[in-house]
Length: 162
Image (cartoon, rainbow, N blue to C red; front, side, top):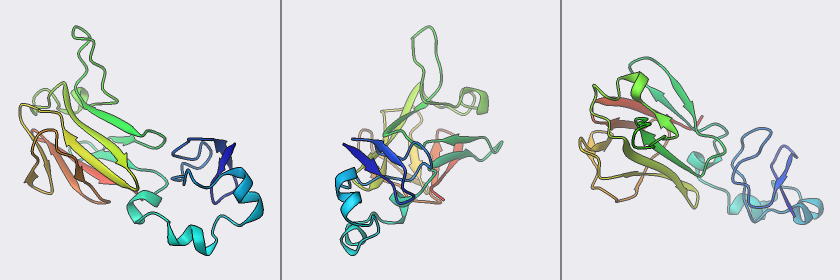
C-alpha cells in the first residue's frame, strides 16, 4: 500500500509527509483509492487539514541569527541543547544559537503533530516555554500555528508553515 500526495508522488504507507515535495499526507488516501478517484475530490477536500497542516515545509527560524530548522518529514521534534556527556542530542540544537546563554534546557520542548494540528509541549524546562508571550504549563500540549512566536528561555523562534 502506498500514499499518494496531490502532486502524484507515491510514498510508503504510514508516511506523514511526501518524500518528494514535503506535502502533508492524508494517511487515509492510499494508492488504490488514488487510482480510482482524484486526490482533490470533494470527499478529500471535506476532510482536508486546516492551513497549518497543509504546509509543505514546516520550520523554525531563530530570530537572533535567522537560522532555519526544517521540520518536514518528522512527526515529533525535540528542541534543546546538545550534551554529549548526558547523551542528549535534540533534533533542534540551539546551543550554537545562544541556547546556553539564553537559558534553553537540554530537553526544553517538543513539537509534534496531533491529527492535523501542530502542537508544542514544554518538557518541564527550567526557564519555561512561551507561545505568543503566553507561558505554557509543563507537559501540556498547546496548539501552534503559522507565524507564532515561540520563546524558549530567552531564545526566540518563529514557527512557519509556508
